[in-house]
Amino acid sequence: MNLERLPNEEKLSLCRKYYLGGFAFLPFLWLVNVVWFFREAFLKPSYTEQLQIKAYVKRSALGLLLWVAVLTTWITIYQHFRAEWGEVGDYLSFTIPLGIP
Amino acid sequence: MNASDSDEDIYNERSALVRSESPALPSYIPDSDLTPPNGTPTKRLKAGISRRPGAAAADGGGSDPEVEAEEEELTLKYGAKHVIMLFIPVTLCMVVVVATIKSVSFYTEKTDQQLIYTPFTENTSSVGRRLLNSVLNTIIMISVIVVMTIFLVVLYKYRCYKFIHGWLILSSLMLLFWFSFMYLGEVFKTYNLAMDYPTVGVIIWNFGAVGMICIHWKGPLQLQQAYLILISALMALVFIKYLPEWSAWVILGAISVYDLVAVLSPKGPLRMLVETAQERNEPIFPALIYSSAMVWTVGMASPNETQRSEPDEEAEQSDGRAEPPSRHSRLLPEDEMEEDRGVKLGLGDFIFYSVLVGKAAATGGDWNTTLACFVAILIGLCLTLLLLAIFKKALPALPISITFGLVFYFSTDFLVQPFMDNLAAHQFYI
Image (cartoon, rainbow over all chains, first blue to last red; front, side, top):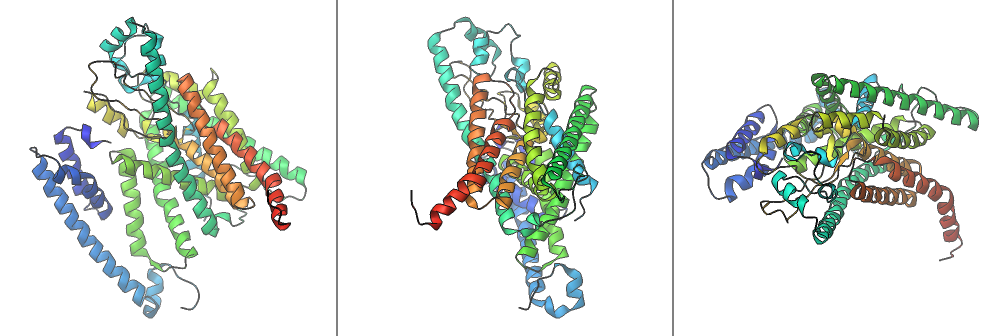
């Protein structure tokens, strides 16, 4: 799918759908949105829909940052305290490393 | 992991789809409705130029040898570019598979679990028995593939598109979620990392959902290509794990032969699929093929998009339908922009190439064998694309590459390797 060849309304619609889709716990979708539409939103000469696309890209970036913060925090907490949590830690674990640290 | 039937289904669908996948012939290009009727001089088709009806008609009139030579040159030049465009994804796929095989031991562990399509075990006492079992396994596997292919062609003929799409979606769902979940688990176990369910859930959910969106709907081209490469690699890894040793090699050989027959013989299912699609003026399952460039037609944005977004797992599954590139001749005055269709290669080809190289990495002596197979496959791909540029019709991409790969594997493993080892042992440099 090449953005160059889409009419502007369709670009806007696509950007919007990606933005809305990201709310289903899909920060990756927001990342794709930001990267893919970045040039369209900020580096192209302006056209009517560009303002809205810019808004969507900015909001996607915001959502992405939020998710990254939350995930990083959680992963840090988990990795640090997993051993101490005992049973709860094991219950949460998908893989448990073997051996003695 | 239990090798459940669903794995089989995936395989079947994929390989079956592969079979049924038929590449579009040059005249079959999406905007074929623009093309003039068959009366068009073959010279235009020969040069592989995409259609612009008015210009084509005008072009067809004056058959200038100079013009023709220039067009041929253009075709060859772009043919070379397309070879490179295919080398990269094929290489990437093989690299992913080999890297996984070499690092994650799960995929090379001996397991007694086998797919139900290869029911005969290879843990037999005698060599003859083992050989017989592997041949029987191959026969079963190939017949399953043939049946699935014919089923697919029948479905396509009777326009059961919903069924096909549903099948494809189910199969890619399985690959994107279940197999990647397993893969991630094994990678974490190999590197002895702790990982919790919530994080894994988020990762797999994101990977799978964005994958489904990119492959079956609309997404950035590079991301779609990346996903196609990844799912081919995952599929290849499953095969490497669950196909018994000798059966795998015999299956590879048999599939190349089947591919040749199915695509080139007049009654082959894949050929019938191509012809049916041609009659209906439809693209053949575009989503299941790896495409190296965007197809677009000047002034016809929508047909392109709909065809792009058609879920075509089957097409992807199809092995080796490389579509010839069509290029706008710059001699046509009204064509300002280039239409570079790129070359398409079925996902099944990716899978079987990677199976060959992965098996070589898993069971071969050392890196010599792996590299030899890798080079052999690329050479085969090159030759296939060359033939494609010459014949300009759908060709099977498996036979040449797999043949070279098999030859190189066995000769390297049994001849070159011991030779090199001996030389090294005796410190004899040549």
